[in-house]
Image (cartoon, rainbow, N blue to C red):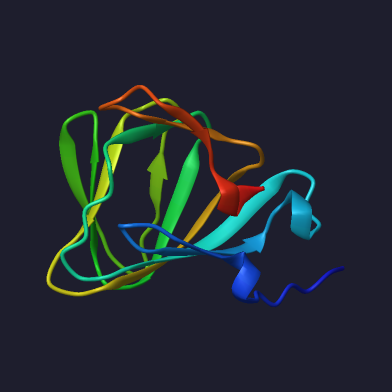
Length: 124
């Protein structure tokens, strides 16, 4: 068994929020990655797709997640299961959100507006 305690090098900040790696291949996993997401109030992530199924588990705050043109609210105590390859956009409302996200290792994300494909560093 291994217990990981994130440090400064495990935090990745974007225009939308901060992702903190918890369990990834570089931190000892062979199959699954997990990280936390902090999104401030009134945040809107880019419309993008990911080539792996993801599970989003809000700890605080409520998210609005758009998948395939449909908005769904996800609150603490619920799990959002996002299918691989489906464009999605994640937003917060009046309050910030803290979320745990889990998925299979080694994903690629595609930004819908530009078609740019990128690795997701907080999952490596």
